[in-house]
Length: 331
Image (cartoon, rainbow, N blue to C red):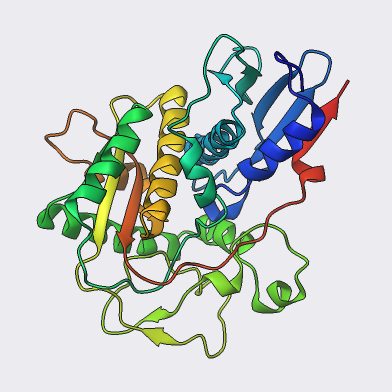
């Protein structure tokens, strides 16, 4: 690697970290293109991995790609590499979401480097968490993580938590009666037999479904109805889940890209702090429900992600597509 250009080996390392990011239904809707001649690395959204029914405007697709972009920034910082990121650099290419170059005039973002160890330890956990509250100091750190990416993280009051949980259940009912939404979830949910074969490298594997809720609804999305698992097991989830809402002041594509990076920064910081995490986009996939999820007195009223935080078992690894499918190196 020169002072001003990426080299292919470095790009492989950065993208290898980037693609561990979460995405809706683990669709991994990203594509990286490295142009060796110019030394530029481009991030594209992959329209073939879009979900027309539940993500018609591609908001969640942008969030997932931006989470991968944040991982790439962390990876660069971990090797002392200063990078410059331009979001939506070309109006003529709507699927070009970001361009990344080495910025020799800047210093590496040393605040990001400590998060690198969390990249491959971060997993979504659909298991019960304990009732122990997350300390205020840790919540303040997560708020700061969101703020650094231009977003706001809100810890809702009791009434607001009840509202959000009600929206999650409402979204589940809507999906149950919507054949197109059901079909999308089924398509991105692995059948236990296919998961056991290890042939599928995307989607939600059966091992990541978690147990069924006993004694009340679970505060996580249940993917098990799409492809039922025999002897999946039952568990009692926490009575009062600890939620946090990530919001932006506007709702443009650039806001989605900022929110996706903030999402991953919050998740990596939570992992570094010893917290287990899960997310739900379920109520945010229906416009009328998403509007109700907001804090009515907050200036940043566009909710982009709902986090569940706490102390509990880490989620399992989920499959990842090989780099040969997501990274193209051109001369």
